[in-house]
Image: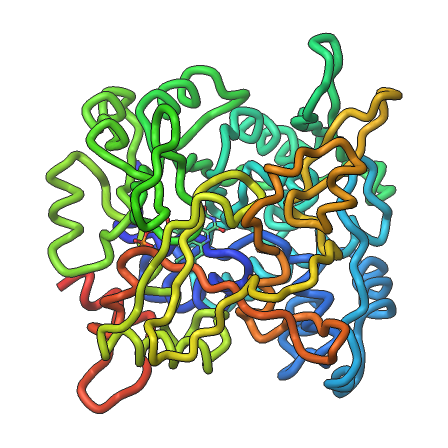
Amino acid sequence: MTVQPIIIQGGMGVGVSSWRLARAVSQAGQLGVVSGTALDLLLARRLQSGDPGGLMAEAAARFPFPAIVERVWKRYFIEGGKSAAKKFLGVPMHALKPSRDLLDLTVLANFVEVSLAKHGHPGLVGINLLEKIQLPTIPSLFGAMLAGVDYVLMGAGIPRAVPGILDQLALGQAARLKVDVHGAMATEEYFTEFNTEDYLQSPAQQLERPKFLAIVSSATLAIALARKSSGRVDGFVVEGWTAGGHNAPPRGAMQIDAAGEPIYGERDLADLEKIASLGLPYWLAGSFGDQGKIAEAQALGAVGIQVGTAFAFCEESGIDPALKEKVLDGSRRGVLRVFTDPVASPTGFPFKIIQGGPDTTIPVCGEGRTRICDLGYLRHLFRKPDGNVGYRCPSEPVGDYLRKGGLEEETVGRQCVCNGLMSTLGLGQLVADGSAEKPLLTGGDDAVAVARFLKPGSTSYHAQDVIDRLLS
Ligand SMILES: Cc1cc2nc3c(=O)[nH]c(=O)nc-3n(C[C@H](O)[C@H](O)[C@H](O)COP(=O)(O)O)c2cc1C
């Protein structure tokens, strides 16, 4: 019988759940998770920043296909880092048929992140991917599996096809994923495909099949996934609406309160009895990051908890230290607010945004930003009148979106989540006036109280402090 971790450190994109955070949690005997979202872009920007400490190079030296490493380094690495006045070089956007360059970058980036998280200890490491971002999924999983990832966690959609893809990748077989295309005819299906042997131009090796945990917010979804997935589902993370990042929308028609936030209630609570009856392990997430919460979750039949916000602001997370400091200061002074924005994210899911109070200087993204879509991870695929596939994002310049057949009302209030999240790491792109894109800071409702992890007199805390408090 396998021993399950009690604490899962939530996968937080982009780059908040860095290899450093996952390694710290994993070394402490719990499940450390790296975010797999946009790791290709993150590696490209780390390399253009000169790979401080040579850590990317250290992990890449363990990658079994040196020609791929060479190609990626040649394209992106800048000795000593790019000049602060220069923009980051763009990375090709993901598409149904990705370029070889993009595949190289994606496979290697996922390998590097997992490999660094796993290095030097025997602990377990997982990777978190969003179902909504479908195009990079298979090469990302392949890179993570090459590094021996132990768990794959996936939410923000219905990841029914992914367990089978893990089986295929483990056997070295070609894999394909059906992608959502708006406006596709009932008879039309669109796939993204990845064939290990074609890509590597050598016989595929067998890989360990990681465990697959689906992140769900309802028993209905858990039941559907347990019964109808393409392969084995090993358990669930059951996440409530107070969790950081994207949240599942409330059930039924979206109702908004006076402050502009979606209204959640009783019927949005997952039926844990039904989930328990599936006989698979589950963990509870969403404001479970405190003392006594493990016992509470276990009394509800769970193995343990998944915690994000408490780890997001610790030393080891990828968030820019200056921003962490502002959040911790705001929390200590009781002036932080977390707003569940129903429209900010182009995914259409509610998205939590940390806002400062009147006397904090947490930057508010979106204000006065000139729209530009240069990263494209959240683009939706749509069927063009000629049957070909097009790509559009409700956060892109409105004129472009309308030209591609999108509706104006779908663009209202949207923020550029891709650029905002990269800036949160201190790796924001420069815009026309020479300043960097503004950060977009997400966190759960729990962020307002995150200063509880600070010891008297200190201005920061570590992942171990979080774990100690959770286990105490
Ligand atoms: C900064 C931040 C980013 C997050 N990003 C993701 C993500 O990319 N994918 C995901 O499945 N969950 C994401 N989450 C949710 C966490 O994985 C976790 O389930 C959640 O934080 C648990 O609730 P808590 O925030 O109350 O601890 C994010 C959470 C935070 C705080």
